[in-house]
Image 1: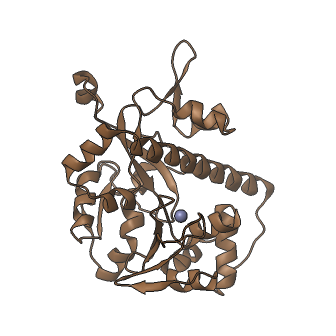
Image 2: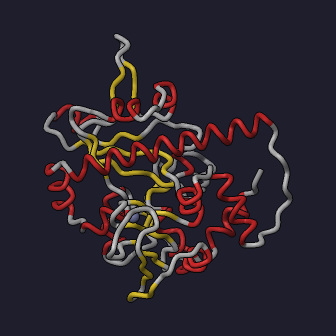
Image 3: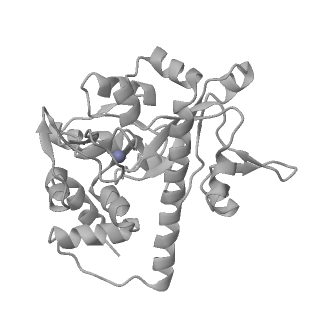
Length: 296
Ligand SMILES: [Zn+2]
């Protein structure tokens, strides 16, 4: 079991140093560092590390990572294995305790939810690249390509396709239902939870996709009125009152500037980041709880 402070300390550590330690030859270019991506074959570097955000992004893979996410991908580890690995490398001391079988099972389950969301994220981003209507919508919003990539914006096609895609990759229906990626209608048919929507992945502060928000861009006035935005239902890793859209991209800058700009919606966050206000975030739910939300 790993205390949250350990995860925080890893997150606060300089990502450039961690990646160099992992064997990447990063070259400085302006405010960023670049190298050839370790996850896909290329001759021109498209792997960019932003020290000001303390995250890395590959414009070829269309993916972003913090230290934990990078180690997970590189070593094929679970979230918790990657945290343990990095805590060891960075000599972060904490009281180690072997998880009970139940805790280990719970960790494994959380990890499966993270992984299936990552697979869905790939599907949505792929669909986005093949959907002129989705690209048009983003253009009209004034989002640049870089901003769209930074936030990992995707598209859920009108005819669905996610369920078929994920089952084809070996994912089980029950997990997809639990993750809120699909639903079941009265006649027992499975349907995609998001259709004809721009999809905003909601990253946890610790760098995994916890859930999604979908913005309807179709022509049906009824849907546009009643369900313009829909979120993934609450899951074990997606507790809306604890989430902020943009937190993954903004966390380092919020700490550095000791300032946070709280926006009403996801589009506002993206516009602000685009003009350099990289400490903007948006809550996932109305501030209704008396105690107020507790963000992670
Ligand atoms: Zn890549």
